[in-house]
Image (cartoon, rainbow, N blue to C red):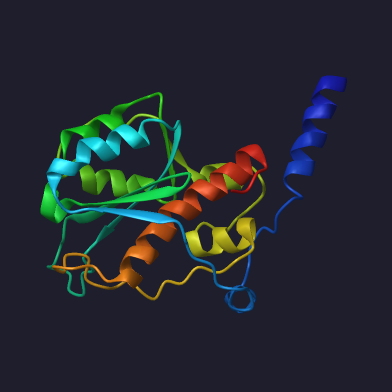
Length: 209
């Protein structure tokens, strides 16, 4: 009984750390934050392997994807960008220029490397439309945050609740297949992957960068 009581107490304490939800008004009162570290943009497949070697030095990777927005039901665009975040760097792989390289797929199939993100099921499905692979060790932050009693599940709300700042979504509907990404697009894309990594670190390890 004492063991169960202790577990219940720890579970209750865990669920009291964060708010369950946050309103749009509350989010808008928070300071805006964005990734301000190094961004490595890969538009040539010849540089992919070198970048993957650097990523493999880490056991947890922030993960996200971006696709050209669709404004009509008949338009269905493939994944244009994969964002992978590690401490000190975010790698942006432009799939519309490099293709879905085998070494990236190997990362996604590697059970020793945790990939963490929000709404990753949809991302994986879109990537599997490009190449069949078996995803290994993908960790959904919505599942982890629910253990803390957090009911919100959007990236923006989770960042506000867990990290205490607001992330801009101004570039969300921009064209990710444009010939040249703007600095604003790169920061936006890098921020989404970086935020996932930071939230994982805080939820699991209680730490910030």
